[in-house]
Structure formats: C-alpha cells, structure tokens
Image (tube, rainbow, N blue to C red; front, top):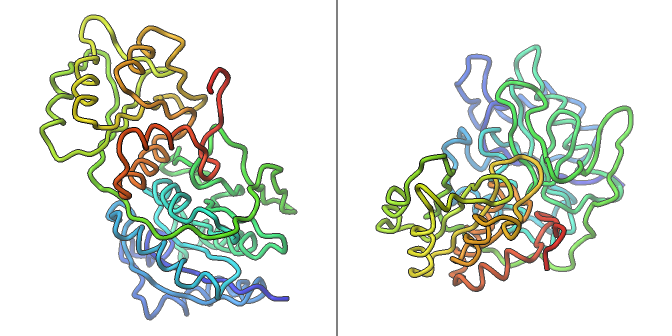
Length: 337
C-alpha cells in the first residue's frame, strides 16, 4: 500500500534559486520540486505545504512550535513527515521537535542541503529522495531524525560539524538510525513506536548557553543574573570540570542556585559526556547546584531545558527530568544512578 507523506517547507538553502540567497516563492515551490525530483511520485503519495520561507538562522522558538503544531494537526492524515529546513539551526529544531513530539509512532525527518535544488552539483535531490524513502519505510522509524549525506541521525543526538562538506551532520554519542547505500541498513537501537503523542508544549526562549574559557571571571557571568534569564547551559571542560582556583566559577553557581536558576552542565567535547563527580571542579559544580546533562549535546540540553521551562518547571523538576531519557537523547554513563 502506498504511503502518504507530508513534505513541509520551512526555508533554507534547498529551496533557494540559483541566484542565492534568493528563496523560491511559495507558489513555485511544488512545481519546482516535481520538476527537479520527479522520483518522489514513485516513492509515496506526497503532499506539499509551505509553513514559512526563512533562513534557519532566523527561526525562532515560535516557528518550531508551529512546526510541531502542524505535525500534531495532520498526524492522523499521513504516514510520515519530511521537513525541509536550513542547516544552521537544524540540530536545535530536531532536538526541540523530538521533545515536543514525544510518543511518536511515525517518522518525522528533517533534511536540507548545502547547495540549492536548482544547481547542477547539488546534494538537495539525493537528500530529499532519501528522506522520503526513509519516511515511507514499510516498518516505520518512529523518531524525529535528521537525514543528510548517507545517514539518518537521531534528531536529539545531532550536531552540525561542517560548514561546507556534504556530510555536514554527526551524532557523536549515538550510531546512525540508518545508513543509506545500495540498501537501507537500519540500526538496532531505533525506538519503539509510542502509544500516544504528547500534548503540545511551548519553548522558553530566555535561555543562555555559556562556554567556559580559561581566565573567565565569575563577575562576567554574574551579570547574567540581573537579566531576564530563566536557565543556563554551561559548557564546561572535559568531564564537567570548572575552575576552582585563580578565577573560580563557584560564586556564579552559588548565586544562580540562590535564585533557583537551573544551570545545566555539558561538555565542550564532541564525544563522551560529563561525569562531574570524578574531579574536584566537577564535584564542586554538583554541590553548588549544577545539573549534569550526561552525554547530551549542547543543542539537546538547551532544547530540553527550553521545553521544561516552557512548562514552568522548577529547578527540582528540571534536575529530575534531566536524569530521564525522553527521546533517546542521553545514555546512562558508568557510575550514574
């Protein structure tokens, strides 16, 4: 039986004309896709909808909420969803959608390209075809995912790792959900279908991600606490270490804790995750209130925090939920409870 897919356009390089950065106009979009990618008709029954036409750098939480609401509203009508999205913030949107659409029983696949569809040497056509093939698999892959190059990656594990290469995305702590070559090779860790799609949530936008640098003084971070900031993702060193001598970060963490402001601890390393209890700096971070994010990406940690704060979660709820795996975003590391 032919699968029915909804192809949703939100913007990005794939839908631009050859005269970059001029985007295709909405009325020309469906005809352009059919002209350049006639193969889509052989894969599934595909409908097209244009939500907006934005460079992904301009996407705001409100637009990501709109994408989630669009999937919600049409969930019963389609077997799968493919979202065309710009590459720059695709990993953030994919993580947010993975959390907003918990309980999926159908695939939601984001894809895009490094070159526009209309250019001769473009990756847009192959990415779009493969994303639709995967969305129309006989046995569904019921996850929010990113397809780029030759791999399907779990959305809440994805990060952009290259500005110009055609294999621009990776998921350092999670194997691909599928490889696309001569055949589709599915991973063994694909999640089981959910029973019920989670109710729609919202994304808090008053979150800051801060990267620790040698010599950074707490007084610079303390200025954040006078701003309308509700949560902070702190990119620490290595296993979750913070400086404890010279210019210690402890005063900032204590001040944040006094304001019941959640500070989520991630690592600047691509691979592995935080285990703050192993070193003095990390242990100090934990005892002063920091919340360990395990091996979550910065994008996933920020978007999970955004969903929790969008639901008005307090710091204790944030701490509890960051220890829980919602959508495959984290692995329980050795030594974790």
